[in-house]
Length: 331
Figure 1: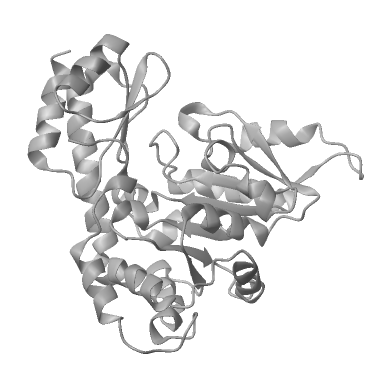
Figure 2 (figure 1 turned 45 degrees about the vertical axis):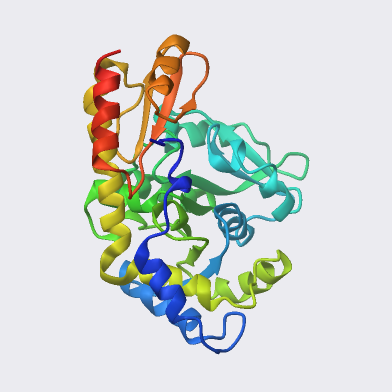
């Protein structure tokens, strides 16, 4: 009964079916029919013209998206707990040729214009200090909390006022969209580039970089190639993404994962460390309590010495979720 990560979830049958259907001769790289269909599919989803490029990993999606905004002498403003800071092994510095990350604080791993203003207010003009070129936010955040459209709009306004790009790390964008239950375009209003995650939500190995200025895509295609992310049989990545978009499978899967997390939260009560708005649950839990849960067959990650992180996925079994909720309530 694994609640380690949604990365460990199964591949959705519709994705396997789409990949099998793509197993026929077509143009290589991103010249196939499926890859060429991505721009239109995402433009329809978001209600505005955009360009979309597939890549194999979320790290590549984040770093390539940021590469369109940040020069090597610049910086990215992000939360201290952001994935690009904590979990990407220095990849942003590698992809951005030495650009740095400037980290800020914020409740529930979310940032606000006020903390960003404080971070930039002391930076002197001129060449002697590093200047930010972009802001990166995570939707849903690293603690499973969701930015509302008005919060994103405020951050976008700040970024525009400072001449900065705005990137959204959407590894769990689907879970955030399922929670908000608004048009996807409303969630990304003012965003320049979105890393749209599919792997955690039922895909096998495909993520999308969505650019809301389609002209940026031409340069990014060169960067994708240089980064080793241009796969010769790219139709198999495009097939996964299109299968997830068809009939809003991406949303259905996310709703299922979110519902499972909400059930776990109902058993956690006052143990909850953060609001449960997506598919992650953080709760206070002693070492002895964690050992007791593992003794009942539940897998999850420790979160420091006195807490645990539980992650639900689209394919979480109802009986496993119910059993863990009861076990938590009984601690």
